[in-house]
Amino acid sequence: MLHAALLADPRRSVAPREIAAIADRDARENWAAMTAWRDRLLAHRTVEAAYLDLIRTGVGDTPPLFINQLVHVILRNVLDGCEDPFVLRAAELFFRPQRLTVHGGSLIAADEETVAGASAQPVSPLVAMLGLPAIGEIAVLNDDNANTYWERSDRFDMALDLTAGRRALAALGEVIERWIAHLAAVRAQVEPLTEAANVDLTWYVGLTAQATAIGDTLWNGEELGQSARERVVGLYRLRLRDRTGSDPIYLILAMTDDRMLRMKPQNLISGLPIAQLEAVS
Image (cartoon, rainbow, N blue to C red; front, side, top):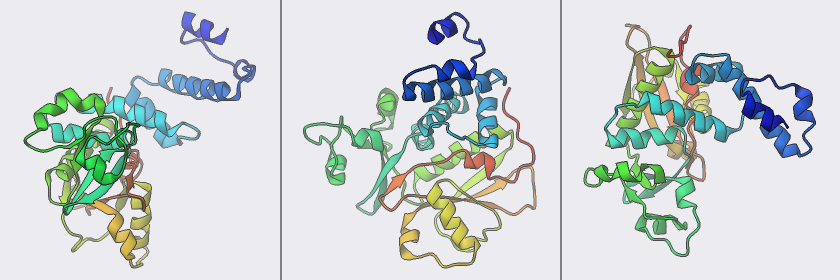
């Protein structure tokens, strides 16, 4: 009944009693989440504005997968016209969990869902090295195969070299710049650092939960243990272009103990010292 009513009138109000009347508990939760997002979306002019409101007021029970899908949609607008496969692949870190491994002195990130897919035998040397099954061929993005990204992007089967000083971390910095400009209407310069010398964490933003914990440790003047140091994937210096003379903001990217990387791009909105945020119209 409710489904048919909303098909006829998608903007129709839904009373709590209508959801409570649904027999299946999972279905009730799904309907509650869906209608809550629909109501939020209807209250704003754009998906971006609704996303900002969600981040500002708290995500509550919003499923993390749904938030990742929102980020994916917004990035389609953020990166419209971008023709750099390294930037586009780096943007996948915003909404796709990554499995990291060290190979030949390089830090390689592969899409977690892709490398964990079921298959009889691994077909890629990278996946064989990870010791995981795969659903298709995985290659590390480089200058020689970058032109194949366009035909493979929806399969999420290209790995990324996140080694400090190489192209991917700089590409991720560009995504961060574009994300902030698009959502907060603020111009930022994001510089990847190859070492932490002369870094004063006057202000910092953790791009993952683990990175926030590392920043908190350093902020409190405590020494990082070796395990925490090894979890750091990247460090950036961010400067707000319209605020000359202001202290730099440091962005920390870190993985879990089991080498998973789950970015929280919402921290780039909630964690920056910006008094007023404006979504794009």
